Length: 114
Length: 111
Image (cartoon, rainbow over all chains, first blue to last red; front, side):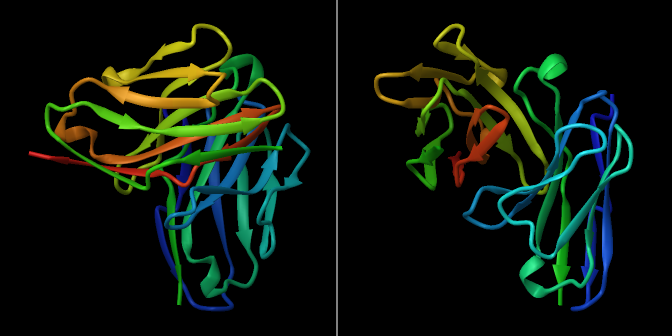
């Protein structure tokens, strides 16, 4: 059971480059999330998708876009990367009916913008 | 509105001694509360959760947490620390689909 799978694991970008982080879950969850984790700051929500076809901004959406491609997949795009976007990114999923209130996380993507 | 405060950013214990990681929360509604553990370069793994059933919650790897409404606390404990417990621990409050994470507590276990 793979759970939540995100790629790539590590990426180095130059300022101004674009990239997409991919995420897929195999638990049939309705809700999916993208978080960023910075030292000493816990996790902050970038965007979320409560169900297929919907997306909403979280706490720190500036500089990011998302696409809920289907029920399984939720991608995060950086259109023009900035050093402030150097962080660890986590994709997650949940479903009130299937997982109660529990959120399940991927392994993380370490992004460095130079 | 909801918030969560992890009272210690770093905790250091010796192997075989008890672990206490403290978490206080605030919420206008009855919350669900979680503890997650994160080992280096890994994702967050669920340790345990409280969802309005028993106030003493048992989790994986010998961890427990007690929900105390009067104190708005959800402290994580383990009777005897193991070297493999060294990690970052996050307390999370979740209300109406919104999750708020604490800043994390780094647990160091000394041999």
